Image (cartoon, rainbow, N blue to C red; front, top):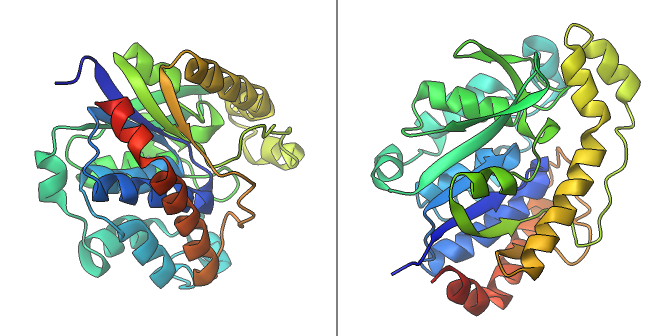
Length: 284
């Protein structure tokens, strides 16, 4: 019997998130369970498959559709305002082309939380997704809606964008919810230092109606680097187990080459397999 609540904390990073997907599939294959999981951006979009226990789903549909204009394309950005087409990604795929297992998701007692950014306040908002209904998918989409590449998502009275803007690695939030032992999956290697957003001037123009969102993006590198410091401090205290790539993954945020997607996914699987006994011991 577990002595305390265990959690899985998932960083984003667009297609770097397939590293996390590889890790999660190994955890599923070895029947590693958590009391809850929380994801930001790609961590949210791919992490839902952990609660639905769909091994291989994230890598499968990304390899199948990454080169499909309906999935991610400049034409989608021009036509809809979203680089990743909202209807295709969050309706057509899960409901028609690569079915999402809603029944298993809803029966699984593990909580699943996503992080989004409120563009009016420049602060993080956290949402527990109970059913992955249409509205839940809107929250998930908001979490992965990158500035400059996505329209602001309006749901439940909020105006939202990418969770990584305000809480890239939501470990503190999960700890505040009572998750005392957490596995944190990072998509950057140890020692990585995030630099200031290079297109800040363009961000300021695109979000000029939302000064708090602009402020958050201007300070994002500071927030991120403080969070990674905290994660590794918690690791030293034995409260966290960190899984991350040994080197930069070297993959484009919008990578379309199936071989590259598979490479990053396989790296995640390799890291998980190398650490599987440590992982099992940690969550017991």
